Structure formats: structure tokens, C-alpha cells
Image (tube, rainbow, N blue to C red):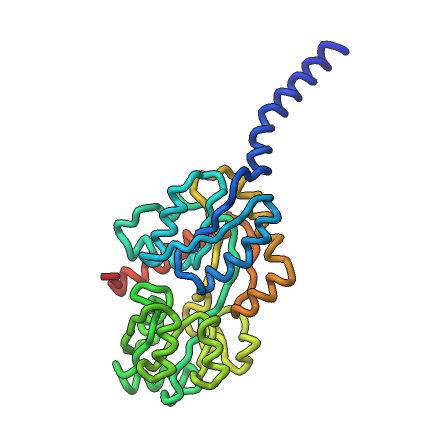
Length: 325
């Protein structure tokens, strides 16, 4: 072998040795993986985590367990993931709209959304449904706006808690449409829906998962939905865009994240496995049952979404002076 070939071989071996730890780190999961859901069991985030967990377990060759850590509008669970060992073994699945509003709602937030959490990928988009109690004399957006303007302060809009994204959406709609309605917080979306069904409140803007059953059972009247297209279950209900309402992309954006300093190759591995899971027909069918659609994509796309929405929702929170206490 010539001296030139020997040098080339030595260089190749050196390169392989340098790459080997990174490659192994990207491919191997060495212990059980946790998916932290920062809300109580039974919600959309929890349902999605339990759908994904067994498939991810098959992919990485380790048990994947779902852990509910509710509290502080999702911030307790998010903080736990932000401070976990950055190796991809601790994941966070939640409505990342909550992450987008957290910096403006909580000035003393114990973690930095953009620096301490690394997006893995988007999981699902679920539209909001704007609906009213049947006693409200409105069947569409025009009639609802006209009634609200003719009766300032009369309509009560139920939400799932002060600072929740559906609360902020209602505040922004009132501002942009020039209407005056009361915002009434409840302990979660299910309680808010029940309040409007009973007539305790009049209007709700809430996720399709929680709201559709009441509309299809004619306990609520569907007025409009967010998202790019009408819902198959409500073909006669127009989209926000068709009704010329703002915030057509408001809704439930479920995303998967991990600790902020996790190596990029580990994030890429997780993203690839997530996108494969979201392509499975059985998973797509289950997501459709939640009133949503899978949103496979890249970590960079989720990062861009967060940066944009932290600013846009933060502007609304500050302009309306929304406080959580």
C-alpha cells in the first residue's frame, strides 16, 4: 500500500471514530422514555400521548410511559421537561398554544420557552368551534355580531380559564369586531361547554373535540369553525375565513417537544419516528375522531410557529391587559 493510501485510510478511520459516538447517540435509546402531559388525564393532549406511546416504544425499543403533571396552565409539566436531562428520553406533549402565551401571561416563568424546550414536531391541529346556546337568536356570524352590537354586555362567553387560548381568542374577536361581551372562566373546556348548554353562559369558542357532540345533538348551534376547511361533521357551518373573521388559525395545536439542549441528531431521530407514526392509517383515524388532522413536519417549522405566535398572542395579551390573577 502506498504512503498516500495509508494516509487516506488513517484519515477515514479517524473520521469514522469521530462520527461513531454521535451516530450511536442518535440511534440508541438506553432506558424508558417519558411523555409528560402537563394536564389532567382525558384531555386531547393525554389522548394523543397514549396513542403515540406504544408506537414510539416499538420504534425506539424501550418502554414509553405517559406521565400527567397538571398545574399552572401547563407550566409545571413544561418546566419539568425543560429541566430534564437533554437526551431525548423526556418528552412533552401539549397544546403549544399554551406555550405561546405563557411568556406574556407569566412574567416570572421558570423556564424560557424558546431556549429551554426543543421542538420535535407538530402532532395535530384541531379547530375551534364558535357556538351558541339555542336561545341566542343567531344562526351565523352576521346575525351573532348584529345581536352582540345591539345588546352590548348581554352575551356571556364561556372559556376554559383566564389566559386560556380560547379566552384570548374571544377577547381578540371582540376587539376586532367592535363588540362587547363578558368573558366567564370555568375549570376547563368541558365545564365551559356544559355552562353554555345549560344556558348559564351564552357563547363558547372551544376545541372541536369537546364541542362537536353538543352541536350535532342540537344542544348548541354551530356558528363558525377555524381552520382551512369546513368540518365534515358540520358541512353547513362556515369557516372563520369565509365569514371574514380574524384568527382563522386559532385552535388546538398539539406538539411534541423535548429538553432544549438535546443533540440535533436525537431530535431528528424522534422527528422521523413521529412522522412515521402520524402516517399510520389507524393513528390518522383516531386523530380524526378528535376533530383534528395530523400535522407532520420538521422541528424547524414548529420553532418558527412558536416564535411567530409568542409575538402575535403576546401582543393581544398585552393590549387587553389580561392577567391570570
